[in-house]
Structure formats: C-alpha cells, structure tokens
Length: 67
Image 1 (cartoon, rainbow, N blue to C red):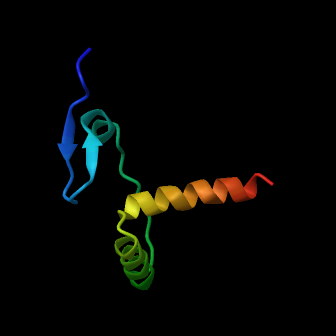
Image 2: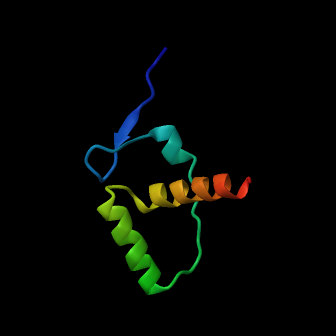
C-alpha cells in the first residue's frame, strides 16, 4: 500500500496531507479588525494556525452545549 503524500506547510513542523488540502472550502465572514488582530495574535502565541484555533473553539463549544 502506498503511503499518503505529505506536503510541508508554511509553518515549520506542520505537515498537511494532500487529500486534506484538496478537501477544503473557504469560510467567509466579517469580524472587526480588532477581533481579527486579537484572534490571530492569540493563535500565534499558542503556536497554532487560526484555523486550528477556530476548530478547537468550535469543538469546545459543541461539547459545552451538549449539556
């Protein structure tokens, strides 16, 4: 069985499978400039991408609302 091809992202230490990259879609919504700056700054301070932070926050919100 062939191994999945992997491509290097723009961030050192982060790898993404080609199939995962091919299965993406754009999510468009407006936020204030201040929110974007804070969100991006927090993601950088945690050594994660903004997408990773969004996904983690979404998962935590779903868990919290299951109550």
